[in-house]
Image 1: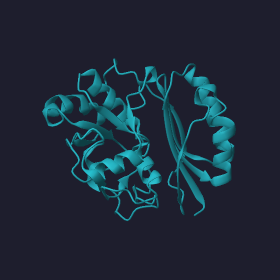
Image 2 (image 1 turned 135 degrees about the horizontal axis):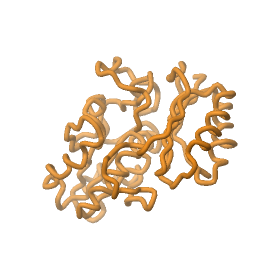
Image 3 (image 1 turned 30 degrees about the vertical axis):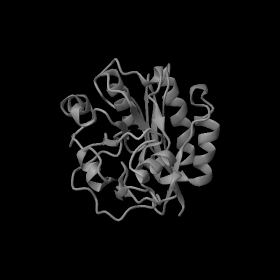
Image 4 (image 1 turned 135 degrees about the vertical axis):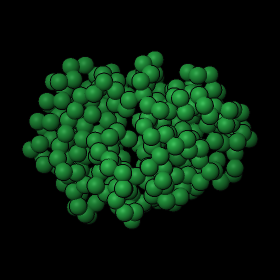
Length: 260
């Protein structure tokens, strides 16, 4: 497959966003890269595609050359068609809007569980302390409909800014359990985990690397997963082996620039 697709994010304090936007755009355009880069004072979120050599070169020599983004890991997959129509580099107030200014992940992450450990917990039916594991899908309702973990808590939120109110309404479902929040790439479940911790719920973790990281780490086996994973590009979904999925295009219009 000729096109490499990457996604990545990092919550980190970024300054002089217009200058950073201009540098990243000026370096990506000559390489014929397409996709979306979102910048905010709280960090970066991007999903891009292009020729493999060109994209890997840009990541190494332009993206990771920015000191706050040094060593930034990527989640990689391939497609036989270009999944984006153009290159967009945008500045936003929040990478993913929560409307809860006390949640500042650039100041410190929530605790995380790695994919291998989660797969083991799901197989044995509890965490290593014997506590019940509650999986919490922090994505929008139409994303969940494409696929999710079996038995997950799905609160049918229409947008991520609905999450705080949904948690406050459903908190009792999670009490006394080890809660693992998850999303496509990690950005939403990281904020969600911090919010739940702020609200005093113990035992909250985020899935390291999100669903895509789980697919990659488990080599497509994805224990406990059902269906495909919705992605915000023209592939619409990817299967557990990270190949483009089989689901038909989503009936609900979705901007491919929406963060993951």
